[in-house]
Image (tube, rainbow, N blue to C red):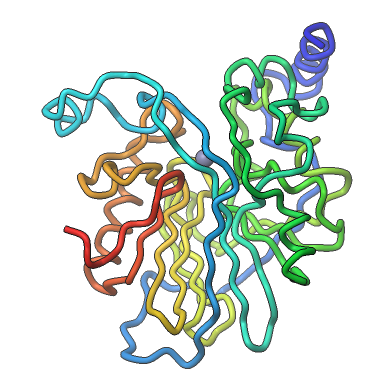
Length: 314
Ligand SMILES: [Zn+2]
């Protein structure tokens, strides 16, 4: 296993040079010129979707990765690095006209026993504490049990913990990712590209948004053009990180993705730490999301890896 992992890293080094894409799978652009800078305030949206959050697993991760421990607020709170309890979620929306879509991919059948079935390289596995995973739901079983016919999956980003259920999905399902998520190149990807490729599975139908803006810009897209489902391009955690603002009958839902992993980080406005690619840009995106929450007052805000925060909480 170790030899295989090293060989694949060497192979990727040979193919990519000193930096490479997060996946070498083919990606198709989704060009849209109808993006805006923010979400219009409207008392009642034209269409509301059904919304659901599903917790697939409990897990643990380093607090120094989840939160910037050098932030003055983290220092004042005396936070030190340790393992923090986190969870893995996926979200489902059902649009009355366009059908069911998922945000992030949940969990594949390979993972429940802490064994990955060789999808993840040993180098990555040693960093990810898979032995601490406690799985409650696997994606395909959940979709079958609830007779959900998926029309697409939106990825908050392509870090491995968000792609664990992708390889089992029907190959025709579009996998949407944010601007530059696949086409940006980084050194770290030399170590994760093989694992990401296997987790996305063979020939995924990968589609990358292109809003024709500079890579550092925050952009909003009313995806169904009916005010029910907004895609928020919030770069920083990764180049193509996405957040979502969703209107359902019970109110607004703001999905932060890993622009903010934790409840404490959201409440205190502290960005992620070592897990984030560009902290300055993540700061700008988190400030944008905070502002959006102030203006639109969603009923629930969903940090990437912890329980949702209700508007009634203080
Ligand atoms: Zn994550």
